[in-house]
Length: 122
Image (cartoon, rainbow, N blue to C red; front, side):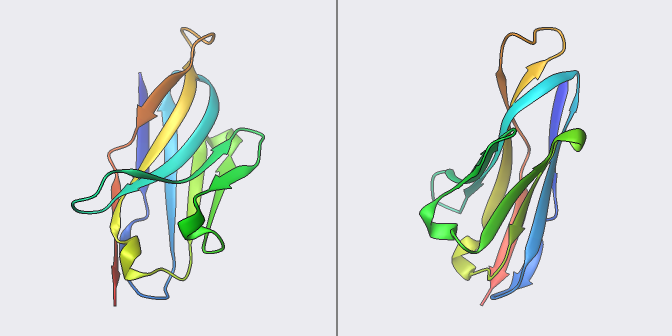
């Protein structure tokens, strides 16, 4: 069984910073990629940033230059450093992981975390 758990959300003033963390745990053989999505009230879930293990990060245009995604392979953890936060960044941030389980390393499965709330006040 695999768990994906986010942490680090909270309330911050506009212009401030937060660092989100997400750790995948359980019977994991390897992780192919991890990413961060967000969903604001009344809106669809959207990709924020993603990173392939051993590869370069990918960012959506609306956060370029403000957010940085990084991965610690040894800890099965991905981070999202968010700087210069804006009220429009307010959303639930979800972690997503494509990983291969110990019992079936030839197949990749997608897992979601429960989300962490980020609120940016003006």
